[in-house]
Length: 366
Image 1 (cartoon, one colour):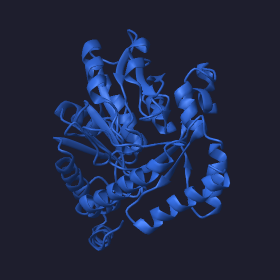
Image 2 (spheres, one colour; image 1 turned 135 degrees about the vertical axis):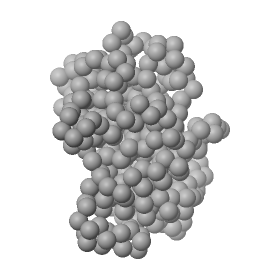
Image 3 (cartoon, rainbow, N blue to C red; image 1 turned 180 degrees about the horizontal axis):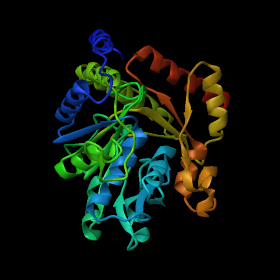
Image 4 (tube, rainbow, N blue to C red; image 1 turned 120 degrees about the horizontal axis):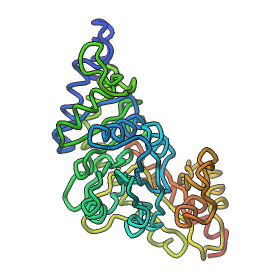
């Protein structure tokens, strides 16, 4: 949403002709840090850049190029791309189909002497198990970088997502709760990490034309920051409406539980809703494609539930993984979809989704 106040700020920016990495970016960083309960926030040009810069900051803390970062097999491809772009090797771990998140029980078996960090992804805004991940990281002296692209406003056991790991990378793309249209932001409670991140977003600069690090061109511009400041002011209202929509669908889809696994909110967690995920169960007398074709023909928009990157994404075939290596991620990809629950959808729109799903099941005589 672009507020009227944001439009006025954009007009002012165009008048003063200071369009990048200026006063509004600093204000946006400060407001974001306050809302997410962290000491530092560093705004950048995209969520992918946020991931890549967070990884690159580890070079200030002993990491070497070619070291490994553990990520879930099921995620948006940007997570893996960012790890590579920062000079690290992504090491994939399967997920739990009930949570969509990295399976902590499978992390230790892939840790090597070159492992430097674990990067859990809070997919669909559902928090990963940060207790288990934190214990593993402490045991092996690893960093934790949260990919919180879709998890604005999420909480795990009373702690806000974005301040649990060493760093957290958020996307501020137009579909997310806080948006700058494009853009990203990294949060941390470590001032030295924040210093490295601010250098990295501006080509690795430390002083005027002195470059200490191999950096990026990843600065946020003032127009995006103005949009972000407008969104920050209505963050709580947007989050409240998305959570209302999420909890409403969770309740309504409970009657379909024989055939679908849907995102659930467990005790001790608060989902920062990105979308409503639906996975067709093995015993269902229909396929994901049949369900999606029916709801889309009825006017309900949907998206695939990402891919098992190492086995279903052609650009990662060079790593040598084969189908079957990550069965849970592959199952979620083959049998999962997600539908929107954004703040502009009213309850009658969600009722229509339930109605269409009911009608589809009747066509299958179930």
